[in-house]
Length: 248
Image (cartoon, one colour):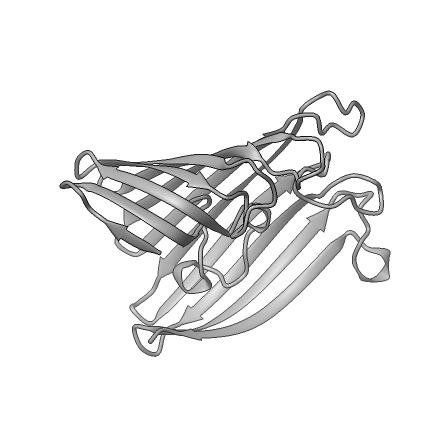
C-alpha cells in the first residue's frame, strides 16, 4: 500500500492492508499464536482506500472503501465500507470501535447486505499485566435458515490476559465463544446449523531476545452438543502446540 498526507494529521492510503477489524493480527503481535474463535470468522485482509485523521492525542478516526469482506479482488460490483474509531481516555485504557458493511454475495446471486460491528478494549492495569477484550456482533439480511426473508445474526467475544514475569518470560490465558447458527460466515455442520463453540487457552512464552519467541499453548474447544465433528464422534477437542517466531 502507499499513502500520503496532504495536510497535517490527515493520511490517505490505498492498496492491500491487514483488516482493521478485530483484536488479533499476526501471531507475533498477539498473546497466542492460535486465533480466538471469533477471530477465525473476522476478515483478515482487505484492499481499497483508507482515509484517517488524528483529531488529538486521544482520538483518531478512519474511513474505508473496500473491495469486500476478507477479499483482495472484488467478487461483485458493490463496494464495502467501514470505519474505525480510536479513543484513549486514560493511559491504562484504549477503546477501539470497528465496522464493515456491504454486499458480500458473488455476482449472479441475490444481494445480501452484511454488517459486522467490533468493539475492543485494551487495558493495562499494571506494568506487568496486559488485557484485551473484544466483542463482535454481525448480521446479514435475507439469510435466516427458517425464513429466507429475515435477517440472520452472529456474535462472539474473547478476553485474553498476559502476565509478564520478566522481559523474557510471560504467561497468558484466553477465553472465547462464537455463535453463528444461521451459517452466515461459517459453513453448516453435521446438524445442519452453523458453528456454536467455546474455548479456553493457556500459554507460556519465552523470548530469548526482543524480536524472537518460543510459545507453548494448550487449547480446549467445546462445540455445541449436537456438533460432534471431532475424532471419535466427539464435540470436544484438546490441542497442544509449540510455535517459534522471529522478526527481522
